[in-house]
Image (cartoon, rainbow over all chains, first blue to last red; front, side, top):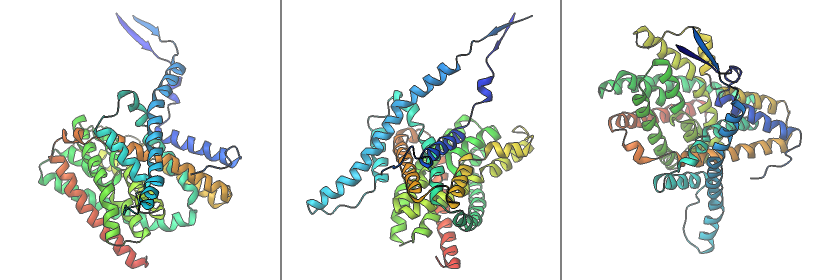
Length: 43
Length: 361
């Protein structure tokens, strides 16, 4: 008897690379700065 | 007849657990990085108040040194390791945000020059490392991994090539250890040589971007010299990173031709898969900055966000460098890497110096 395991496929379809996540987070931060949510970032 | 077992959707829970697992390590990166920043501010002032002669050590170096001390004395406990490994994520996010400080015209001008230098550097490094690997009788695939790691972009290139040419895990561990050890050495030697030779920010930045293999170490080596050199090192290193797909594709075709790797089907899809997406993000942010999507204060805020991201990266560079682990990997690949790196550093310095003469830098 063989058993076939079917995992939900929607997750893997949307799996993004580290690079892409880094770009998305950077753009989100840039958008927050542009819209004035982050007004000043000190260093 | 096959029994079908449907596994219930547990992905949101898994994602939340993965997120929770990175928190301790990210907090450690932030603590080490911030301690480096505090040391930069306070040690110099303390020494000056007591009339001591003490070199001005930047936060970049403090963060790396603190990380190295932790990693090589008490070690990084398991609970922190997943989060510490996110330093590459912060590096890439930092590079994208740094794009706000570049105008498109500058990128096209400098990128054009650096593209030519990068092409010469990659061709020269690949040829020399292949020759060296043969002289030292290293395994051919190990030689390929060391050549790609030295010529293009360190660990990322080795991992990408390993999959494409079906190299052993052992070969990739050897190559990664050699490239990381040599990257750590470059961090300390490049700025000293740069100051000794009185290199300008532009010449040094180009040299660090061309000569240092790993993106994190190239960014740090540039930032250790000056802010302007750091910016340029990131630009040149990103140009090198953009070449990764072409080099890996070339090697994949070569090894497939020898029957020792799977043939590449759709070459365009292969190139896109290997292309570092953060380079596109960097370019897009600089296009937005060029067309005044951000005002001056906002560009300043993005630049500071980029510095915070790099701070976590520099802490991670120190924390993931363990010299005793590297020693275990053996001497021969390290020797090949070391000889190769010294020659490539000299070659790229001559290349940049020559370009400086031609363009009057």
